[in-house]
Image (cartoon, rainbow, N blue to C red; front, side):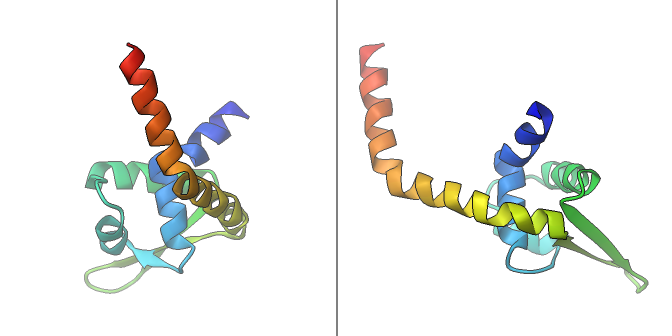
Length: 107
């Protein structure tokens, strides 16, 4: 259970899932949409999510090859949970920032 939660709870995995919730996307589109992610980290994250059955990779026979990534039905079931977590973070970010400042001031 821990390994699964670590995977889907990872900040990059959550960002990929949120972006793919809008529909299939190419690698370059995901890279542009996810602020701060490196090409290497995006590749690794997509591979891990594909291995877990959350993301599907489709290669189209064209020159150059076109590759799309999309959420699988399993991946779609994660969207409401991740969106709720994102909403919670947005709703509470001021309180969290204040708590961090108070904690850091004690140190």
